[in-house]
Length: 160
Image 1 (cartoon, rainbow, N blue to C red):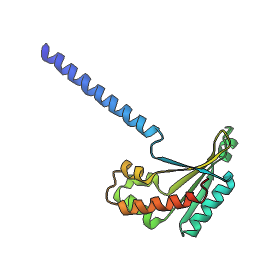
Image 2: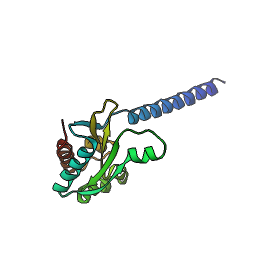
Image 3: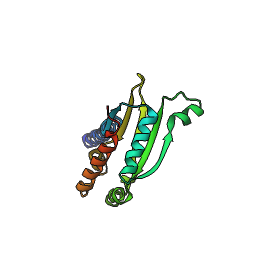
Image 4: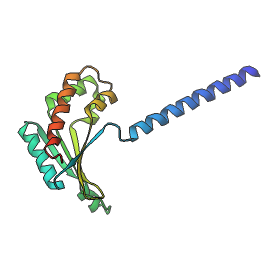
């Protein structure tokens, strides 16, 4: 009887550990860790145009802009101005995918340009060090550093 009781306690302890670990992972993924936010001195439209111009000047491929507010408002939701700008350098970005195919979830690069409740405009993107950790990529430090420099330069064109 005592052995069964110990087994049951061990199983309960293992289940509790798994549950707590899963909750910690969910909480960490859901917080703002890994997000870099830059306050823009321009309107939404001008911020997007300046980012697009900076991308073009650097010879980076612009994949598109999604007007999230337009889509949301058309669907009956009241959405503040929000546009997602997607761009990248396939020669650089795909090196991350060759290190871990799941890195494709974070490529191409995306910058969210949005208007806060107070009317301020921001450009936000995922930090490349965080992306490297998320996908456990340790073999592309030089490439991640280069990507970080590029995104800082692109968003620096709108920084307040």
